[in-house]
Length: 178
Image (cartoon, rainbow, N blue to C red; front, side):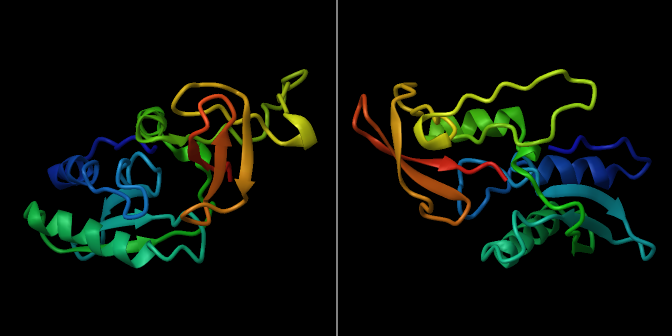
């Protein structure tokens, strides 16, 4: 998640506060800020607020709904004219999901993604635990068992996979690391 930058214009910090309550339409347990798609809030040359968004992927069907929800929230807060600006570079990554967002996903029953960023240049080694077949081990969000199996590469959305816990037998989704 991006940290709001202190600004002389109080609308910017107010906008961050308002946006922290805008849910993602596909995973309503997490806000668009915790998801990391709100990259920046700034004041444009014309004085309008600009909310900079990076979609989770270029074909995400929720992009328009997110833009509308963000602008409606800013408007409802009386923060003046605003517009959504899409920034595709750098591309969104699940590493941008906040720790609070990861906890919310887990509480909602979705296994949060593991880290996918490259290791630091000065690191000597990185250990990545893999299950059988080279798949990362995904712990069950309900009982925390690592004994799980992937049923489908895609869940209810393209960014999630469908798993089943072999211990508690419950199905669950896993937010894929991107």
